[in-house]
Length: 289
Image (cartoon, rainbow, N blue to C red; front, side, top):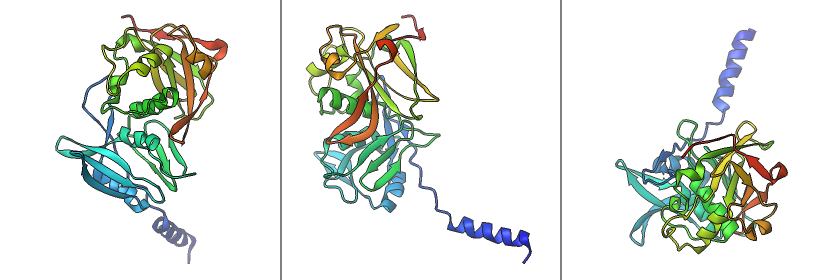
């Protein structure tokens, strides 16, 4: 057999043996308003992605609300995610998945991770999958905010619209601070002011009564090409050296910067406190109010 024909046959066989790519679950924005737009996941692509991995999906009615039950192999409890209608189609609420991962006992020594930003990878036991697509990414901002709020403030309650726990004053995000980072792209950071923490600690379950009295810094961002960009109210930002120092800070604008490892352990996101050089950063640019 001549070499060109042999090479062609080898190529055909290799193509036939190649593993098919996992189905994509393209996210769409949930048009509910708020300073951050949450994401929705179409049900059929979600089932095509998770079904072959042994995950059982079942729509049901719980307390008058449509929910999607997600039963992962070897987990102690199932996840329950809201199902909403938009443009005559049914979707699962992405944020609810992260809320469930921090609220439910899924099993002793069961690995649980959420890693990445626009197409995050989730690990639940032996099941590993990616949500979102390059063309239709997930916006994980509010889901990560819930994990940070629970870890830092021990507030495990989750109102229907997490965006209500953020300051919607544009001045809160008027200055861009940029930090160099050696972390891989997609590594998630969070920054929170003591004022944001105090208001949230006093807030009831589902809202901030009367809103935030002054711009209350909170932001999340992922490393991109060795850079981390945070949106803050002030041109100069001061950072606490530890969680304890932040909790005891008298200046309500004192910030805590943390890097999320992706792991969720005993219902809390695992993180490390990061202190920028000199304990402060200066804005690259500020928008005038």
